[in-house]
Length: 417
Ligand SMILES: Cc1cc2nc3c(=O)[nH]c(=O)nc-3n(C[C@H](O)[C@H](O)[C@H](O)COP(=O)(O)OP(=O)(O)OC[C@H]3O[C@@H](n4cnc5c(N)ncnc54)[C@H](O)[C@@H]3O)c2cc1C
Image (cartoon, rainbow, N blue to C red; front, side):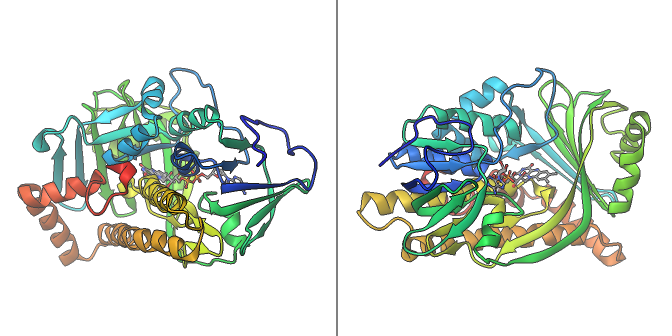
C-alpha cells in the first residue's frame, strides 16, 4: 500500500488517477476529524485525512481567537489519551473552577463549584485552533497518517469499495470514509443524507473582552428573553463572550463602535464583572439546530457537526463530537483486531446505536432550555426560577447536573475513561 508519509500541501498526489487504499479516509481536519484520525492511527491503521485549509500554526501570544470551546473532563481525558493535551497546555488552556447561571427574568440562580465535588476544576476554555493544532501536530508525527491539504472532494462513491475523487482526478479508496466536515457537510449532501432541524432565529456574537474585575475563573451565563449571554474566563483575566440574541439585535450590536458595545455588554451582564473596558474583533454566527437522519451509509459514517449541530448555550457541540469520534474509533479498532470488515453495516450500526440517542437527548434538552428561557409566559417564568433555586439547594440534583456537564454520565468510550 502506498502511504504518503507526512505529505503536506500541493493539490495532487503523484499521478492523476492514482488509486490508493486506506483503512480510514476522513474528510475534514477540524477538532473532531483530527481526534478520530489520531485514535485510529494510534492503533496502527492506515489513515488519510483531507482538509480544505492548513490549520493556523502561529499567532501573537496575546491574541485570543474568536472561536473557543468549553471542554469537558471527558474531552480532556480523550485529548490526554491522544497525547495532545500537554501541547494544548503549552499553547493555552484556561481552567474554570465555578459556573454561575441566572435568569434575567427573575431571581433564579444556580452556582456550581469544583470544590463541592472535590475536583480541581469543572473544565477548560480552549481556543479551537489550539485543540486543532495540537492534534494536527500529533498526526504529522505518525508515519501511518497521510495528510492532504488543500484538498477538494468532487465526487463520493459509496458501496463495497468506497472512494472519493479529488479535484484533479485523483481517486482514493478506503475501507471506511468518514465525513467530519462540519455543520454544512458537503459529504453528507453528496451521500444524500437529509437533516432535520430549524433556525433558532438567534445569532451568536463572539469576541474577547476585558472586564474591570477579575473573573475568578468562573464561567457565567445570563439567560435573557432574546437569548443567553455567556462570559467564559481566559487565564489572563479576559473573557470570551458568546452573546446569543435576535438577528436584528445582533446586527445593531455589531454596528456599534467598541465603546458603545462595551457599554451595552456591561448592562447586559448586570456589571457583574464591573465595567467592560475593551473588546477585540467581533464575529457573528447564525444558530441552527440540525440532526442527520442517519449517521451511516454504505462505507460511510458521519461524526461531529456533520451529524449534529446544537445550540452553543451549554457548550456541548465539540464535546459530543469527540464522543462520536472515540466511539467510532472503538468500533473500527475492534473490527480490525478481530479480523472483521471495517465499515461493515453491522459495525457501523453499533456506532450509530451508541451515539444517536445521547446526541438526540442533548439536542432536545438544549432546545427545550432555549425555549423555556426565552418564554415570557408568567407561570413558566416562575417555574423556571423556582426550578433553578431548588436545584441550587439540592446537593443531589447539583451533583447529577455537574457530572452531566463534565461529560462523565452515561456510557463512555474507552478513550474517554
Ligand atoms: C458561537 C459558538 C460557540 C460554541 N461553543 C462551544 C463550546 O463552548 N463547547 C463545545 O463543545 N462546542 C461549542 N461550539 C460548537 C463547536 O464549535 C462545534 O461543535 C465544533 O467546531 C465541531 O467540530 P467539527 O470538527 O465537527 O467541525 P468544524 O469545526 O466545522 O470542522 C470541520 C473541518 O472540516 C473542514 N472542511 C469543511 N468542508 C470540507 C471539505 N469539503 N473537504 C475537506 N475539509 C473540509 C473545515 O475546514 C474544518 O476544518 C460552539 C459553536 C459556536 C457557533
